[in-house]
Image 1 (cartoon, each protein chain N blue to C red):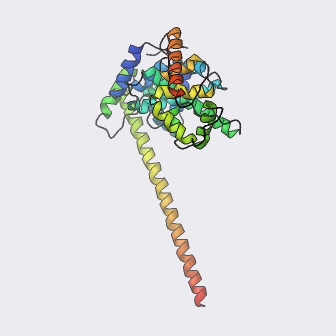
Image 2 (image 1 turned 135 degrees about the vertical axis):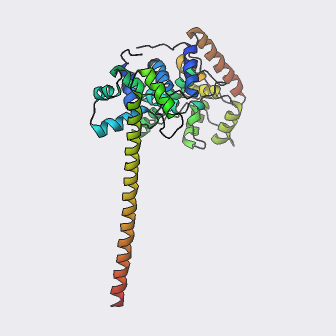
Image 3 (image 1 turned 180 degrees about the vertical axis):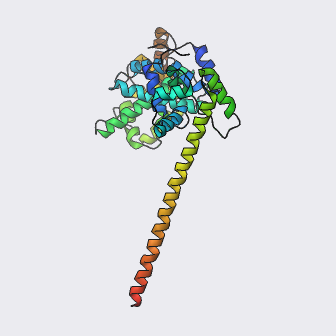
Length: 211
Length: 132
């Protein structure tokens, strides 16, 4: 089972064929990426309890993607990063749904593109994690979240913030959020640390201290 | 490409059977209605059984599209299969699904008509009782 990311040129070429409407491009892209993606997600979401289910979720994520490849924006991140983030979002959504179903602790979704606006449970949970000492008088959770969202407008940074608030420690998870999983691990560590430090400085002005 | 497909790819092809975008969906319907296993389907298409999951994960050519013949030929050339047979299977499944859809909507329509008739009869019966 190939467990490492295929060469970028090969991914890009197959993706271009998919965009061009070649009928066998979907099969080729799936064959090229499915197993490396499964391996990557097994590494980056180790808390996911069921390996077969993880494979199915990643598979469905890829099956969904090849039907609508135009939703990928090459200006934002590499395709590999996009697909790992997409699959990771699906996995975490499933985890969250399962936890809710079992009435366990509700954990908010660190993948911000799925955060429903105005979900006060999630906002409260984030704010509690970010500002454990409590908000100053007169400051509402919703207002703080809006300010944060304005302050942290970059999607990658927002994902990093959500992961920090969740207490995530794994570099690979942050690297996945930033779409830099294709970089060498040492470089990932540096970039992740830089992103976290930048966020800490920017958010301090809102009274938000993140560890 | 005729190497043995990975287990994950075979599994993906099966999951794709539920999604009309993929040829897997066409094959699932066709196999089901003709009681064929994968080996028999591969034989019918004239392609290597190892390639069936790959073929199943291809985009289903749309019979009503101008590109239909070109896409079928593209797939036939790529997977060394019988293009006439592939086109025929796609068209048969399209016809079968259109028929099923027609029957389902017809049955639904009949059901609504029947319900309307029952309601009319009930109201008429009530009216007659009131008149008595």
